[in-house]
Amino acid sequence: MTNSSQTSPVLIAANALTKSYPRGREEVRALDGVSFNIQRGEFVAITGPSGAGKSTLLNILGCVDNPSSGTLELCGRMVHQLADRERTELRRTAIGFVFQHFGLLPTLTVAENVALPGLIAHRRGNQNVGALLKKVGLDHRHDHRPSQLSGGEMQRVAIARSLANQPLLLLADEPTGNLDTKTGAAIISLFHELNQEGLTVIVVTHNAELARAAHRQIALADGRCA
Image (cartoon, rainbow, N blue to C red; front, side):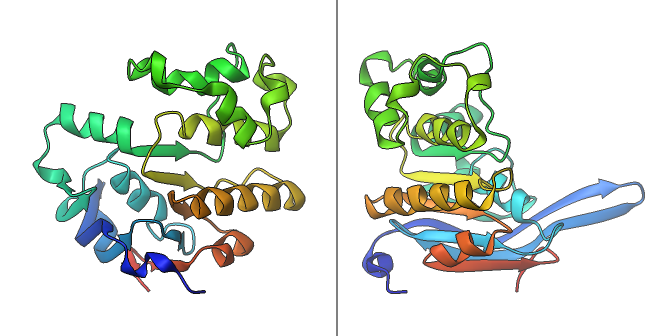
């Protein structure tokens, strides 16, 4: 698949990323020298078997976790050089997250769930919740609770919420993992539309259809690029 982002600026530069965890007397290396660049506007799927290091890599790319060694440049900033407060601010302003289990707060309405990231970032005036819900086809569910939605609708709400702070990068961890094939295909189509609008999208997935929808794949095996 041809991707015009080949001439776009680099959004992510990962260099020799490693991540190790102690397990008893052993050291488990979840990532082992992973390097790659992702350009602005790309749609990339991170694939590989369970235990390959996919979610660990996604957490590092999202500034949720730190590598044991190696460097990560994100949006022109060297993440390891940032103070905790600066890293948190980068995560809030530049990155949107979508999870397999949706992560919606059951006591809030659909609109309140979508508005939450902006409230946390003190951006009440900069949000257009209605426009975000319309983008994901759920403006008619504005006042519903998550318990009143289908799985696909909950994931669409989660995607709308991830866009609340107008991120440069969308990270999704198994976003179709809890959905049936038809509903998953609709979510894949939505990711494609968002990417066509210029959003950089990175997904961790076992879903072959979602992986094929991406411009390219980064395959991991035993913590290394396969």
